[in-house]
Image 1 (cartoon, rainbow, N blue to C red):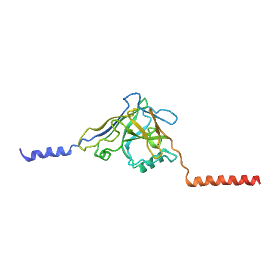
Image 2 (cartoon, one colour):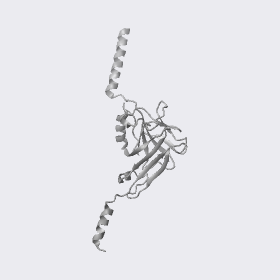
Image 3 (cartoon, rainbow, N blue to C red):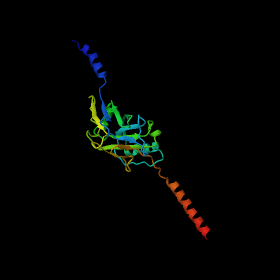
Image 4 (cartoon, rainbow, N blue to C red):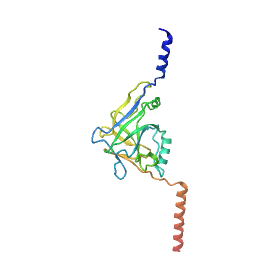
Length: 220
């Protein structure tokens, strides 16, 4: 057979895309013990009325400190060196987290073996419209909440089904001051608490001292 006959075949094989897939599946089908996504006022969020980001932080030295979730999330991404894997995870009609996040490219490789974090916003519009949020990780779980090793060119890298049920999986809210909270049956979100700017604080102090001075004069 002539060599020229092999050339089209070689070209076609080289042009074929390499099949890669790193998948994180979070399932709520394990039973009634799956935690519910819940607001501070005890209202549960159902039917996809949230946005859930799946990714990893290099550190968790961050806290809520602004007057809006949008500002807080921008600061958290920088402080925690956030790397986003994918969305694709939400809540079902029972307010339980469910869904699959998938990265089909080699860019999934930097996540190999890193801790999986969930960032939950109380609206499907995410941080731009959210008024509450929570950041959570599993501290003890089977299977472990870590990203699988992505083998470029090898399909099927996945975590299996990650569960949010208690007591098998223990979770905690993440942050220097934890953002949100967790109990045996809920992921509770939190609203930001504005920290007064130094100038605002100084102005308030001046007004307070002025009021105190006026009272003393009136007594005299």
